[in-house]
Image (cartoon, rainbow, N blue to C red; front, side, top):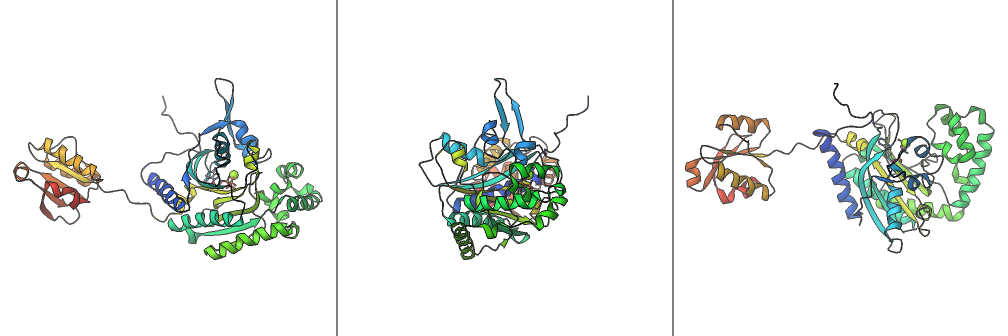
Length: 410
Ligand code: ATP
Ligand code: MG
């Protein structure tokens, strides 16, 4: 029988990969907390309608990428392709729509049936932020600033550029949409098949197409700027003013539209040229219509999500494997060694003891696991209430009273 293989587009997170991944989440969680965010965890699977109804019937995610299945009860379920819909569903389900604002951080796996390649997987992981409730442009700027601060804390902000756009309000978008329909209808034959469908169902989505032929037409297409109402323009100016004040650099790009249907006003992406075609590391926007789609009251909101794998790939170095302390009994010192082992662990020190072996074997083992120090417990030393602590980098050795071991090894 051949050994079982992981599913294409999934990966095991082990060793350095796991440490990179964890470092991204821990860093992001800590920064998001400074912005007042609490962490939410919503289920990995939801009723299919949670996504189908909200992400937009014509979005790539809904038309081609969802992992949907019937469970044994005959209900249609979907493995979450993104985090925002579940968070908004949870807001409504938990009756929190009157307890606003809610500032939310999340991290976890997402699932999309895509063609796997570098930076693009079928199970991938996102961190994300949602500010639900505020309608002010300052919230948009804060959400973006938090993303920027996370990239800074990870040491990768300099590898990215923030591309900023506005999709305007409903009125701006209706006008703009009509202009796009005119433009693309006149060039219909040159559009990709997907974009011809988008032209009928959601012309804005064409701007997000990755087809090279489409991209050429898009470069010449009308941009939102001239169609913005005064209110929408004022909102956008407010976002930019606050970003300037926060010291977040950006580049305006009228072609940034988000792939999902629920966005309005601010749309943004942090992009990098270090990851080839998969250059978007963190992306988001304002989604004032989504909570209502979920059955709640009209509720403004702004948020973003970032791919953990893409962020982890940008880290120059992986966080080092933590070096343990090796506890080594000599002769009849096993019981005392167990006491020392647990005392060290309870003091927060990574401590290990080989399950068996003589002094030489245990020292070999200590070196093999990269221990930074060995605590040698001989019968005579124990009788005197001390242990020999050997620094495995320098080789220096000193007798240390047992009670002082945690403090000395921390
Ligand atoms: P793309 O244009 O790369 O397909 P998207 O617009 O579908 O991205 P979003 O839905 O905005 O992506 O998700 C936010 C972020 O999640 C992306 O910017 C990216 O970093 C990450 N991401 C999305 N899909 C994948 C995937 N299949 N594998 C790895 N990371 C992903
Ligand atoms: Mg995609």
